Image (cartoon, rainbow, N blue to C red; front, top):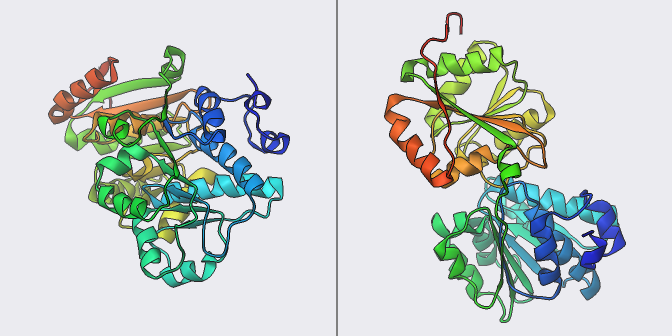
Length: 373
């Protein structure tokens, strides 16, 4: 199947960047073009963002421009970084199309007044729920003309404290309103959100799983830092994403890497938005070889051809483990996912493997000579 078979316009096909539609795109695009509600579940890196943006932009281009401060499409996301990314992809499509449609992104960490001033006419609005409600309270715009609502990373939004905010937003939307939920993980709470929706669940194929080589090393807590530096230096890793469980751990790891001559940047929720953007940009451009991050970056962020992810500390949730390692092995590129496991973490790692349905060999890291690391 080609994109032309999906009834997309030739100009959109030209700018989408895919040679042929991915499985989630093949199923979602026709349903969205028909105005159906959709629940789409597919692994990270499967093309979900383009899967909803392409048909939405095609429909927007045919229905005319939005009125002043009355967006036609609302896309809600859980993090500032994902809002930035979705906005970037939408702008890329619109710029290539030379379309008069306008896209804006609003999220915390930047001036509320400036976002109010820049609102004007917006056809497609990407937002985090908290900042969206802040702007609505200031009468910066109205939701009465929204025809399509998208929840990206919907499972995270519905499970991690966004539910009250989402209910407030949805109470302001007109009825009917096309609703699209996209997620990398299935859950009961997702299935309860939509009735008579087209449910699309793309099972991960063995070939896709094989793109990520998973390894784990048993190490003591005091050897974790030197072992991390050993892996980076001995493996000559030039671009590696290191996940930690807290901002405090992130600060410590960054400090140790920098002191040992490894260029690194940090990103976590306590940093300013400008600082977070700078860290991500430095990593994506290759200015630094290591990005240390909390689970803020485990969802939705697309880093092209990322070769390696290291779990310095395990996440609490097995689902978050899958999202973390899913930052590599994307777009048919192979990748490595390495985990450092202390004796205290072994039981939890067994639970993660059971939930994942895959055994990861635990290698002995105690005999590695870490002198000088």
